[in-house]
Length: 210
Image (cartoon, rainbow, N blue to C red; front, side):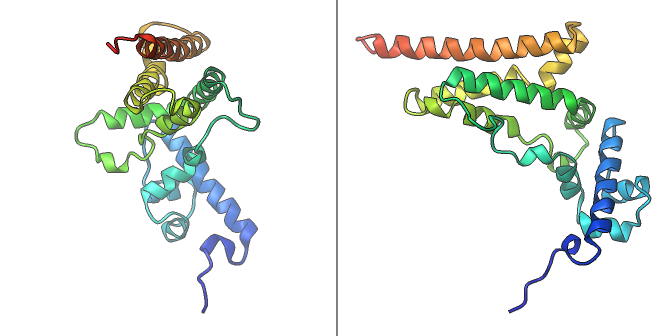
């Protein structure tokens, strides 16, 4: 039984790799300029035919996913991840902030589009809550130590204090530098974790169960 070979892996692989890289580069530049490009728009910017571009990326979703490869990561802890939840969270938030600042123009575009009521939200693949999974991964040692509801609440609270939305407010409204904003976001994440742990400890140590 024969199996189909992906287009990019069949013949002239080096040339195809360059073409794919050109399309991704063009997509990132268009995102940075404030546009979420279609495959056809990326093809035009990369001087690649539309037919060829669609062989690599059948739709806009696939194109935008490829332009942000870190979207597929299930963890930001890297190698030799610590066991301590606080250290795991701080490492994760620091990396999340780095990714946010590195791709700030693109993320600002997706944030703006997400706020436009006429835009098709199904196409906003960069606004899928990937940071939630990274924070959950960082706090996984707390499973069993903290109720599922409390842990979920903590994850959402931390996410609300980090990411592109927080960066925009801290820099554009509060007037902080990006370095200062990064410090505030890391501080906020750890403060929320410590408060949640104190709260959970208080609950479990109260003999009345109140």
